[in-house]
Length: 472
Image (cartoon, rainbow, N blue to C red; front, side, top):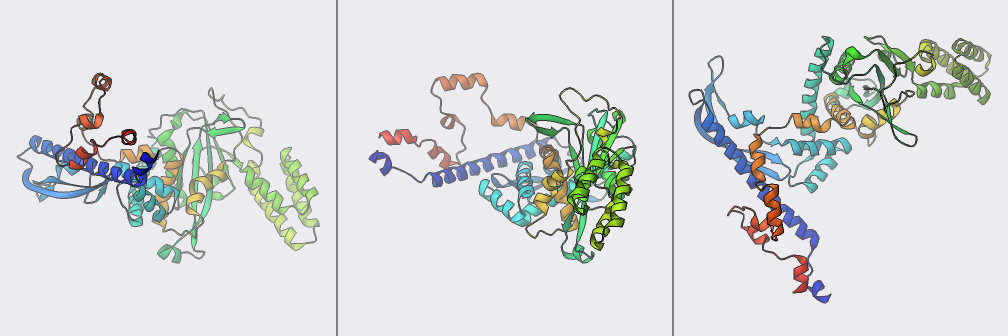
């Protein structure tokens, strides 16, 4: 035991040093692969179109750190005959400009930025990867990806308007919920408003519920979108996002839940509208002058006697002596009168819906308050947070993708591409050879092909295990 203590090492420091060296080795591998791919493109190019003009260095930021490599620049002519210079490697991989962030690093940065402020996100990414970034770099990544998501959603909106949506999910019933959340603005955007903020609109759609535990249910095939934009543009965006996921022509019934705001009730489709139960019940609780009147209102509401409920509220407003209470009751009467068609929940109106698919259920609506907080409020409210309109829109788009589990596939679709053979070259042992080598006491590190430039790694594989050190 004393021998082990005498030979003890700082494991944290050792772990960090090994990780650092592994990242160094990974950067060297990636550099060689990129330059090899560039050589392949050079040899296969149309030499009559692309004239070789030498190599230029650039940098790509990865989870292993910054990888500096050289790629060839070519002289060519544009369609109008103007001389220009291009990098075939950059075009093939979808890389634009110096300091490009890899898809995997971008995904890690976006996930961190969706969960915490940019400064904290930059610190956590810098600590957990081989790449050191600033909070400005994290912000730039979010803005870049948010703008690309916006471009995609604009295209989806145009397709939906032409009834050319590409959604494949078939459902007879589609549930929609919308609400707004007040967000504080900053800078020039704040000065343009009287109140210093603006309402961000949020919409979700789903096709049912699935039971995940005792008294626990989860929305299925949920999609979401959020934006500061105008009512008309937001509705177009919402329809584009829905049509990208759902086969709209197959939908027979659309059910909409909202808090009664005019921008929510407006729809380009025939929908069954209901007033959100949370807002409806809260309005009664805040306006009722006493417990008895509150219970009577709820009783009339739950028994679906809407005309009697409105008459009761009006009579109550005429009978109270307190002016403040009268004002609240008048506001409640107006609120319920404007939303009388939606006071009764959709599933209490007596009409039959198509039978839900196996494993799914149709339940009462009212998940919007939770979604507003979970998707937008938890990240963008509090901590005295203020946003520009553009910056808030970009982050909100990524938050919607994250909470509908579409962030990874979206970021991946924007990532750079390389031929599959380069991935295959990284793993050269077949499963049969692996078993044969393991059976003979194979050491993967010592058997691996290590470049002569990586002397530290050659030295590392010769280090004995901790158990061997303890026995010596």
